[in-house]
Each structure stands twice: as structure tokens, then as C-alpha cells.
Image (cartoon, rainbow, N blue to C red; front, top):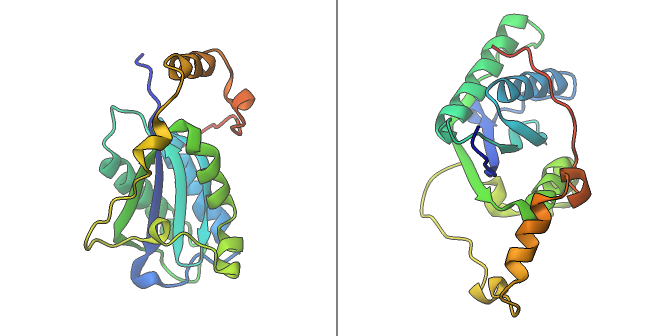
Length: 183
């Protein structure tokens, strides 16, 4: 089995940004999203959102194209939810979505941002680029290159070796067992 570390922050909205993900159905929809993602071999680190959109922080195996993963997760979750009869309205998603890749060092930051979605929206402290779901002109998010320059030539090597010998919970990541009955 190949070794991989591929981290993504994915955002998508309900069709026409209708506020359909109410507190009474949100747990069921999030459960369906998580179940399908895990069934596809992904590791879901965080899943949250607002009544009109969803954020997911996930690691997707390289054998699966990100676009296919997103389509499968959205499609299966809405189909299963609609067939369940749990809501007053049918659930549909917009075709658009946003996806951001990032490195493992930033994983705790993305998890915290998603877990605190409702807080961020209430306090108006959202990060606009992480709330975007449509196309248009693309502005690259870049840090100055000097932030990655290491004084000690061996520092990066030592850091990577340390990561290889520690468990995820030792690095500050939340670790939970995920089981799926997704199909």
C-alpha cells in the first residue's frame, strides 16, 4: 500500500444557497457525508457548516480524483437523505465547490476553523477565501518564501523524521476510529 499525506479543505453549498441544513437535519446529513467519505477510503478530520453550506477537512487517497470524491460524497448523501424522508424539503447541492490543499503542519488550523464554523459566522470572523464556492478570477494564496527557508540545513530532515516516528495524536491531531456502512 502506498504512503500518502494529502490534505484538503472542501466547501460546497446547498442549491441556490437555501438554508436547508437546519439543526434538526444537520446531524443526519453530516453523518451521510462522513459515511460516504470514509467508505471511499478518506479520513474525515472535521465536518461542519452553516444552514446553506458545508466544510469538510479530509485526506483523500491518491487513487481517487478529488472531483470524483466530492461528486460521490455530495450525490450519495443527498440521494440517501431525500429517500429517507427525514426533512420537510428535498436536499440538493450546487454544482460548484471549492477545494484547497494544504500541508500536515496546518491541519490543526483547518480543523479548528471548520469545527468553529458557526462561531466564526456569528462573530463575522470567517476567512473569505475559505468560504468561496464559485469560480471567477483566481488569486493565489502565498506566504513569503522566506517562511520556509531553514537556517539549519538538517532542520527539515529532522522535522520529517520526527513526524515519521510519532503517532498523529502526539502531533496534536484528533484521532478517532471511523467505521462506515457506506456503499
